Image 1 (cartoon, helix red, strand yellow):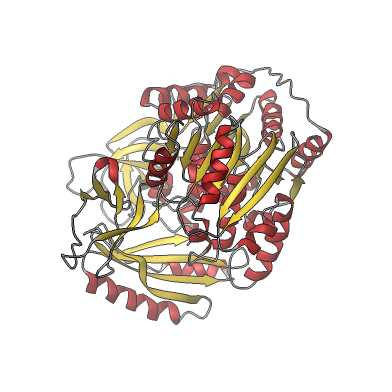
Image 2 (cartoon, rainbow, N blue to C red):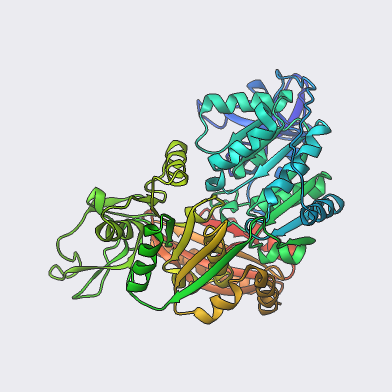
Amino acid sequence: MHYYELALLKSPLNNLTYQSEEKIQIGSKVKVKLQRRKVLNDAVVIKEVEKPSFKCVSIEELTKEYYNSQMLQTAHFVSQYYVCSLGEALSVYIPFNSDIKDLKQSYEFDSKIELSPEQNKAYSFLNEKKQALLFANTGSGKTEIYIKIIENHIKENKQAILLMPEISLTPQMQKRLEKVFGDSIAIWHSKVTKKKKEEILTGLQDGSIKLVAGARSALFLPYANLGVIVVDEEHDESYKSDSKPRFHTKDLAIYIAKKFDMQLVLGSATVSTSSFHKIPFIRLDKTYHNTNKHYVFDESDANLSPLIINKISQTVESGNQVIVFLPTRANFKYQICTTCGKSVECPFCSVSMSLHKNDLALKCHYCGYAQKIPETCPSCNNGIIHNLRVGTAQIEEELNEIFTDKVIKRFDRDKVKTNTQLKAILNDFNKGKIDILVGTQMLSKGHDYHNVKLAVVLGIDSLLNMNSYKARERALSLLIQISGRSGRKGEGEVVIQTKNEDFFDYYLNESNYQEFLESELEFREELYPPYVKMAKVIFAHTNGLKVKDELDKYIAILKANKDIEVVGFGQSPIFKMANKYRYEIILRSSNVKALLTALHTINSPLAIIDMDTIY
């Protein structure tokens, strides 16, 4: 009889020991019974062990799927660093299938891309350093450099990953890559059909697919022979997982590349402070087309001030297009009563609900609860509800009233729910069928808009004033990304509604962004990442008293630890979510090991642990 330690997939439980009459390979996926449950659980064989003193249950079934040693080693790291079970860490991976054999297919490509002297210099630097950062201005041609590097690896019969934030996986990027790599490229994201995913997984294992361009989950596919990982828009916070395990895809890509000796390229026009501090970089600030950007600041409190309306009018009348950005989707972020001053809150979350006028409803963007719009204030029963902080739907409505003969469309998660809708809107916009595009962060994500001569940015101060050490970096980075969509070729104008002109005016010039990063690093020294490690522990439960007791218990334990610092604690900014009361503790330490040891001692079922929190 053989005895094996197994990690139960998707389970928070520690590894369990099972027995088997036959010898099983380490990494094999098996099916086992757990207690009295009738449904079989998926598990992974981690190691063979001595016969234990207790009686073991037998492994029920051996599947054809397996996890290779690279997957197992990375999952071990994820479980230790991001504080989760090994089964939870392994569950992000899609395993190999032993029925699929590597066909050893090799491909020859010629991208026919001629790099400029500046691009060539960057290309050489990235190859020489093995793991490096491409700090490249918008429009400087970083995609061409990516393609050249990927091409090298494919010629050596290796595979490549090009990671992008989900909404950067544009039809334009797909076409560019397919033009060079043909059928050997696959696009991977959450909206790909089940059948297509199966085809991609087979192609990855038999070697017919050489390049996967995808969102963060593309890092966890069964690659037969991975040679390079490219992380585009490396500054983007959507690379951080918001569910367990709470890994950061970019940081994990750095770990994998170093551990398994692969090439890694991180790229962005607005690189993150952490990458700028830790990774060797090369600056690419020469752009393909000479662009001349003109910035106008508007201090008005109006949603659409006379200055903004006038600028939009001039631009569309001259046959050019406009993008209007704001951080909030739906109509208004908050509904406030003019009599008692209270907002209409979600009954399950302590957040104000957002108005969705087209659906005649108020919706909670956290738990999905919806209700009809109240005629009077539900708190005082006689006040009138007033709308505060404007959203995309409201701006679209106002613009339609002003520019009755123009085509105005919305570009946010409420309007663009599928890949087909994304393609349709971008296609229409690039063909000139839409005059004004109103959207949220989606507008900033690497889309090439050929005829945009004006970008209008509203509500950027709400990001700058957020209670976070990253507020300045977030606001400035987003503003530069949005600005980069205007005047890609030739003249461009950006109107920014802000009361912080002095801050934005100086650093908005992309060539000054490096100076901003240097000053930001000075400000963070000894206090914030990348100099120290930070973690957040959230306690959540439907019983408010129970969760408060748990918080108090762990504050006492953690404050007694001299190697870590409790920076703050109390109610979470969103105190109630999905009917659960939430409290949190923010921790920091310059000693990574001490912080991780402390986090691993938290064994409360109410705790959610977020290492390297991006609060």
